[in-house]
Figure 1 (cartoon, rainbow, N blue to C red):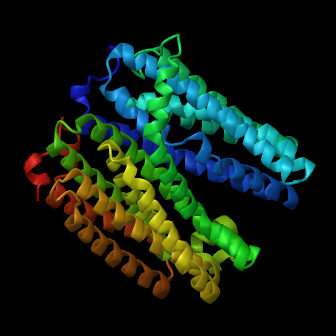
Figure 2: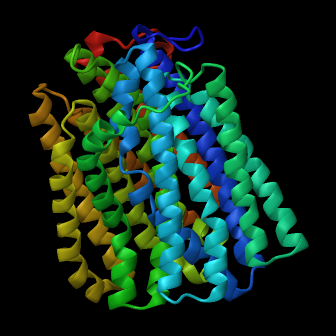
Figure 3: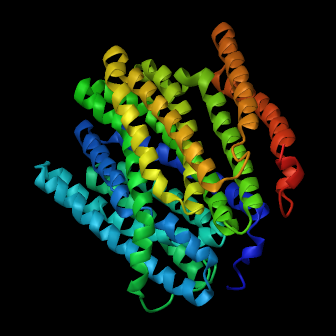
Length: 498
């Protein structure tokens, strides 16, 4: 282990919190700037080119099913528990494997638009934008190296700086030449800046032992075998998240697809924030299992409660002022999607909690349970979506997604509890109290907003502060999470057992 990387014995709650704070701040910053860039492009590009742009990057986003394969989550245990020489070989093999998966994704994307007869502009744009996938896939491999050593501040810095550069270049691009191919270039620059900073960090040993110069192909077999059930499960979960758009496009109108996509934008922001919390907790869970099940339980309970508190905060801030926020960002015509957007935010909350339970299953070496659970949730979505869409269009699709996410969360919790055999693993009491606090504050904020119509930003700020006061008390008295304890070396065992 390098001098710069924390030893395994110090992979504690204190380091996890510092990583979480850095990643959360970076992700919120990047999400805000990304939204600005999207709004600029949408307003400046001709309508048809904006459609091409959305299609191309939507297609590239779906390729995560191929380019990820869950290998990163499967390999992190080897990076945490392996000896330095072994870890160096694993790191190199992992980076090369991810690079090849990125190239495969690029070929599939370009091949799809060619075979499906897309317009020439879409084919050319995909060929250019697809380079993003080729760069981003090995870049994510480097992120996993930093995750294994709890050095996510490097990743946070690289993403924040790269996003700032991208937005600045996007503004210049639309002012200079607002055309499809020109506005794609800043996305490529983003990936180059991000991976460049990560490469420097890895070379300095911040990602653990410096990757070996030779490739051990023998590692690929175990990596892919361990990742297979996880990759199938993740593919099904991605389909679960996106199937509402596909069903609306088939059974309803594309106007409904557009309204449904508004709520998805907000749900994606919650997913981004959730990953910032989940990544450090994942490393802790991998590090302590199976040697210390007590600490595994402690980290999972506190991580779940903290994640729930964060997700409820977003829900409370958004719920009373949803129509105002939608009107500001997307225009008055989209405010009819406010109810669907609220429902999608709730679904994203359940999805984030399910994601944390999913990585806990992976950390415990029980990834084989994930595909069945994900398939059951997807089946529920498909069964209930059809009649709900027929009855209530895009709002019905949002409700179907919420039902499916609840099924997914409960099923994964049950699977996790059975798999690890640890009593009182799920912090039901803290989350119930957080839910009651969030519901009460959101209801009060909604009543005030409708009765007196104060500035929406003031309403959001007041309800957020009110909820934070209540949530802090809940976390303190139920799972022992306070600022003082979070800054300590490890969580309080006694309080965490409440």
